[in-house]
Image 1 (cartoon, rainbow, N blue to C red):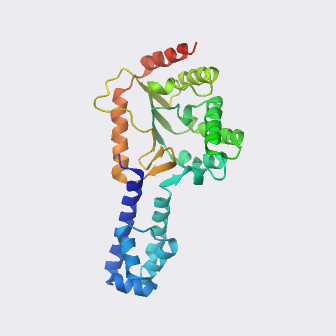
Image 2: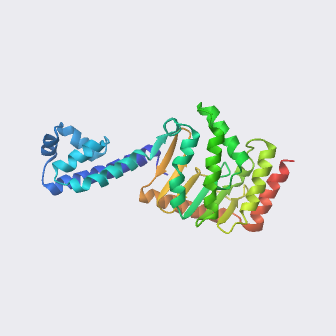
Image 3: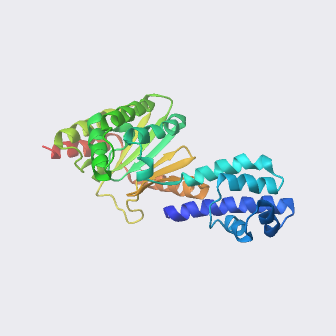
Length: 281
């Protein structure tokens, strides 16, 4: 997988290439463009190479200098998307967990097909309120955030309504995700029981990759959410990563397909979940 920093850098290079194409189409040199914008020539060079991200003002000035004002808004939209690809948690959660939960609601609502792989945790669409509370309380404590956990839990539970709408969910879990104790025994028993119930929903497919599966060809990777074929979200220790480059999206889609072949479904999956419940005593 491409690293977060290189993913952003590739997108910046692609933006720089578009800027170069606009300048070339206008028939002017980087020196002339810089002169028209009141910049040093090196600034234009850094924009085109992707080594320096342009501001919205820079993009509009570039388009004006090239007689291509009609291109400006699309470029600004692209740049905003790039800057949103890698966002540190301290920035995303600066206004609290409730706001962070609300920020992804539009993405959830417009997505028709969810593909979710989770090696460590039960994922959001099939979490119980108690499990969510345990997770968000831990995040609040570890990151020193304001205490809005109850409000954030309500938003997250409301987000789950999409499970009953015009959406489909293909969820792959490593068996280990059933075994990590989040919130204590009672919370886990309730969560795993709810997982069994969710398997009966017509919009939800849940596969479990057994710990005994042969992982020689593909070992566990980072957890990810694939929203249609438009975006992948990955939660890192320090930041939230949004992948939008088409070749990277294709890599995640292929990886999901390969992981799905390792999973068991239906009765075999229920047996693994039931065994995890029984192990809790």
